[in-house]
Image 1 (cartoon, rainbow, N blue to C red):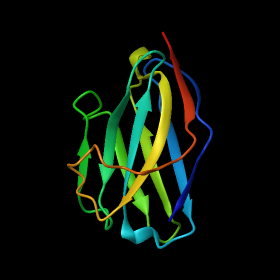
Image 2: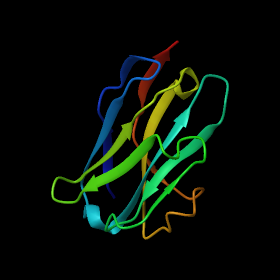
Image 3: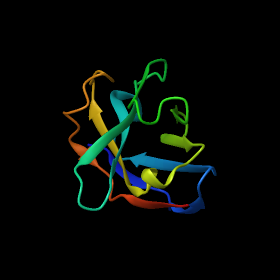
Image 4: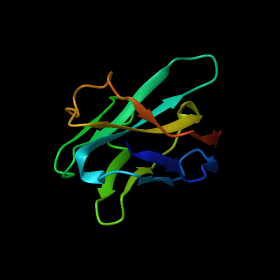
Length: 123
């Protein structure tokens, strides 16, 4: 199965932007639906965005629609999360996730996870 490694997150001011990347290795990248989740301290891990194997279909949590964009480069085996208009409530550890042949609208069955990367948004 695929292994996932997220790029470093960072500290950004409210209203700023940040792009996360997640590099996959160890299996055929195009077999996998890819997603981003996040977990704030003391809270459950929440779905953020997902993208289909071809990249043609995406799904977003309501809280990030219009601000975040998920994309993938199948030639580079990488998935991205572009985060704009960041808010303090976006502060969390962000996790890349994968599962073979999963609908982007099924947010509960991811079985492969990266280690996570911290994003902190200051007010």
